Amino acid sequence: MEPAGRSPSGSHASGDSSGATAAPAGEVRRPAAADDEVRQPGDANGEVRVSALRRLARAPLVWLQVLLVPGHALPRIVEGGRFGAVLLCTLLCAGLTVAAIGVRLDMVPVLLREEAHPKAAPGQDSQATEQRKSDREFDEAVEKARAVQIVKLGAGALLVPLRLLLLALGLYLVVRFVGGKPKLRAIVALCAHAGLPGALKSLLAAAVALRQARLTPDGIATLVPPPWGALDGAPLQRLLAALDPFTVWAVVLLAIGLPHAAAIGRPKAYVTLGTCFVLFLLVTL
Image (tube, rainbow, N blue to C red; front, side, top):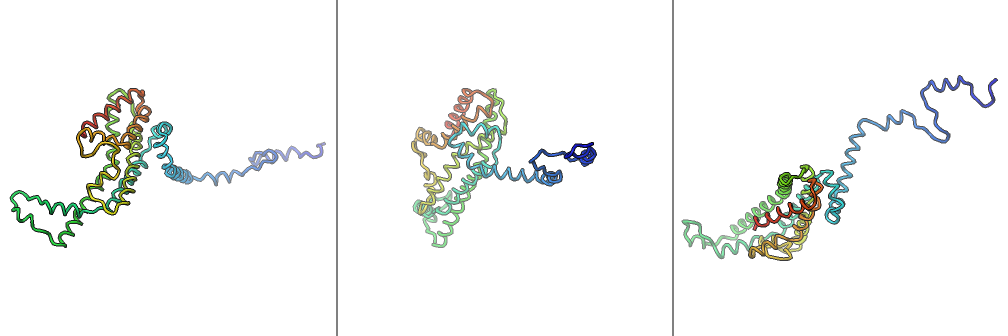
């Protein structure tokens, strides 16, 4: 005779035949159909998109960490090997500077100086060069000179990411030559993030340009003047001007990240990078 309160064994058999597992007391088990509804094939792509958007949203914070605490941020960045967003950032900052300069650019003083001191072309009569332009011709010349200057500045802005990529290629070859085992993607990521001080300088130049009532081409190079030396002085002064804080900042970032990106010791990395930087300064004087 079965004890009271217990179900017959047949009821257990019938319950097991349904394929469901008994849940512990107090726990609600979600049916298998619900699991199938959550794990849809298309959700993987959605998760990838969300992850990419989150990385993009966190990018400014990561760049700020690179600038302020590079010893903590650069090893992770080099290991990740991502550089597309930061290259786009440097390009946008350079483009913003060009736009700000274009708003304030004034070519009238340059053309007036050229009219005051005309240069005769070979075989041209000196009296012909002394003929003044009409107001309409002068205005057209101003607009043309302004457009040419903006195009030159825009071309320079487009070259900023290319220069960082060329820097990465050159550094990769140098590190291979000294016996390192660098990963190209890691070197590119390091050099791309080393361009952040230059991007910050571009933003400062844009802010200074917008504060000007007008800006001549001669004043573009001095929007963010070097604290020491002179850009148009003697060779030693030009050398000191090239060692502006933003350039030194970029070199420090490279020095911190190079041992991680090239798998070499810090002394060798510092000596290699220092030698390359000195040679670069001597060549560009």
